[in-house]
Amino acid sequence: MSEFQLYKRRDFSAYIGDTMQFFKQFWKNYFQNYAVINGVLLLVFVSLYFLLFKDLLSNMYDPNSLSTWMTYNNNSGSFLLSIIVLMIIAIVFSVFTTAFPMVYFNLLNTTGRDAFTASEMLNGIKTYAGRMILFGIISFFVMIPIVFIFFAFGVALSFLIIGIPILFLGLPTVLIWSMQSLYVYLEEETGYFQALSKGWKITFQKYWHLVGATIVVYLCITILASIFSMIPAFMMMGSIITSGGAPKPPTMTPVMMFFYLIGMIVTFIGYNLIYVQQGLIYYSAQENTEHHQAYSDIDNIGKDEE
Image 1 (cartoon, rainbow, N blue to C red):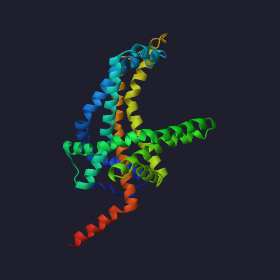
Image 2 (cartoon, one colour):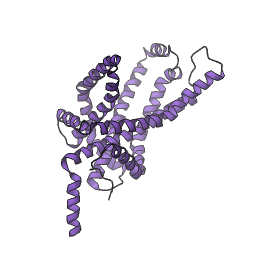
Image 3 (cartoon, helix red, strand yellow):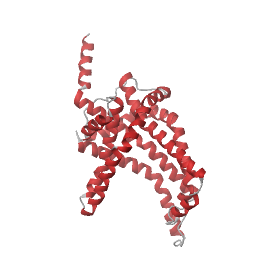
Image 4 (tube, rainbow, N blue to C red):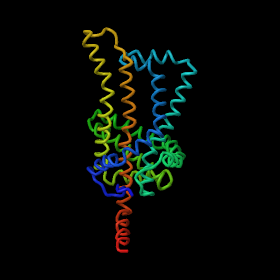
């Protein structure tokens, strides 16, 4: 029987603390299944990304590298096909990685166990996949234009200073709203616009707690990934200093590219912190309105008396 409380009223510190507690308690089973289900997709995605953009990456500090790279690949049918394949893999990988913690929470909630098999996880992801793709397609025409207008408005106001906090708060707000709407859409099987409406309400129930906790976790992921991704930049700076200044833009060595790609992998894995935290936000919102834990405690008292 799992002792982790999904349905629990949380504040700023609890959203962060319970996220860390979740991984402290379940990290082994969670990441074992993550490696089995998402590991191959992640490696294929990163490998194809590297093969397609290695020339651009190797000369990323050259201001002319983008135009040269685009001209070189402009008329290549195989390159266009590879881009399409990369996009398909990215969509599939996005579905699997986003659904993964949702399925894990659902199994925790419905089974009461604290360990699950990869087949259980995969079956759960399959049940979510269709509605997730539909949610993404509808959002492309509904949510994304709204977000684009919002950020364009923020950029315009940034010249008046007031746009800077709008942009700073806008990213976590959109993230919370979209994730909570997705949770409602999948777990409660509501209509799309009803899910958006309820997701919006959840976002602003404890707005500053949610945004603050989301920003903190996002910064943790960024710092963790930067440990690897900054290594190429430091190596590049070191080569320039030791050479007394380079007249030509420096290129990335294979070692630098290796650390760059490792940084990408760490970033994708680190996003699990965000996904898990968003799950806790959803179940906390459910507790705030439906009092699941209170009813559970009453039921347990009755069982103890028996």
